[in-house]
Amino acid sequence: MKRKWLFALLLSILVMLESGCGLRQTETPAPPIIPANTPAARTPAAPTAKPTAGPTQAGQRFRRPNVEMTVLGTLPSGVPWGKAQGDHYFEGDPNAPVMLIEFSDYQ
Amino acid sequence: MVHVFWNFPLPPSKHPQAQLAAEAAECAGLQGQFWAMHDRIFANQQAWSGNAEALKVFQGFAADLGLDAGAFASCLAEHQTAAKINNEAAYAQQIGVSSTPTFLINGQGLLGAYPYEQFQKVIEEALAASQP
Image (cartoon, rainbow over all chains, first blue to last red; front, side):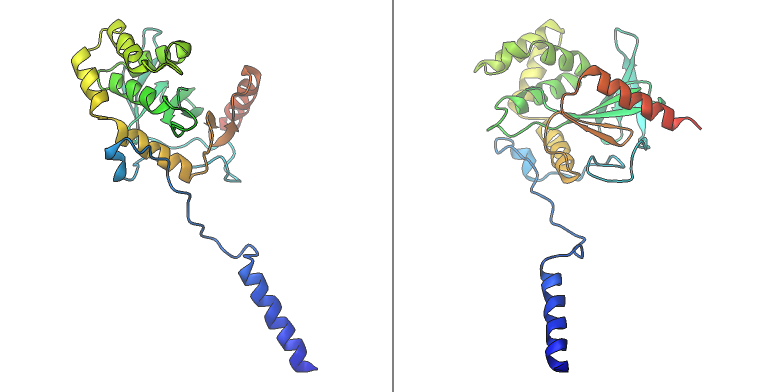
């Protein structure tokens, strides 16, 4: 009787491990989107600037990324523009308390 | 507020000319005119989206902006900015971005083309949260 109980316990632990049960912390990220017509994309270098929070991360609400920003000029509207860490273009006051990062294409 | 643009062209199967448009903006950026080209591409989307001659349209934009036509054409032909764009897209996907547009406002995600009022609300909340 005791051996049957132990067997059932071991079996349930194995099932929990196999199903994940919140224990798997590292998932392989999905492959990056790399258009096939761009040869340079075959060996992408790691980006140097990363936002401190992703849209799916919890507990990061309203935390402004600490990113180096270099002003390179002024737009006709008088708004400064330049490059943020990681070679991203920005427009606006680099010291503003709110940073909006737009992930977008043009189409 | 400061606005940072992060390239995330969707695959050609979904947005056939998104990569070319991104390269056009980045190539203009090499001549100091990223935002001017960015704005022009968005404002005249109907002129190039779905147009097999989109390349010529972008070259026209470059001419309007007074860019060096030869350098702009070479930049596009040689895909000089493709690696940068693809790196950005790859990393965006790794952090969970899967659609356009996606916005992060001080880390708060806003997925999709929301009305102005929604942006205003989130930005004002972010501003209030940033006060000591």
